[in-house]
Length: 148
Image (tube, helix red, strand yellow):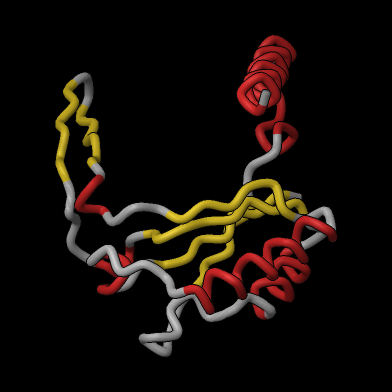
């Protein structure tokens, strides 16, 4: 099972306040533990929403809305992508995480399961599955090439 672990934004993260060396060190150690356990697939922090945009879809029409966005509690400051055996295991890992925003005291991390191919049933035809596998393989190849 794969889970996306979402670190919710707050006023400081939206203001562009960066973590201090102590937090960066703690998060680095935590990420190393995740990697050694074979759990970590990806981990990234996100720039404030003021540097982002949203695209609103209404039928065939597309409207671009530049950040910043209201509702800080609904915004994301960073994420991990993990492979674990269960939601319970993901919860246990999150509980071990350093507080992402210790200067505020409170932080919130959301855990969301990622859809797998088999979740889509017969609608996800063999041709679509093959396409998905081909795209994943291409993506992995690009990663390997970019590292060289």
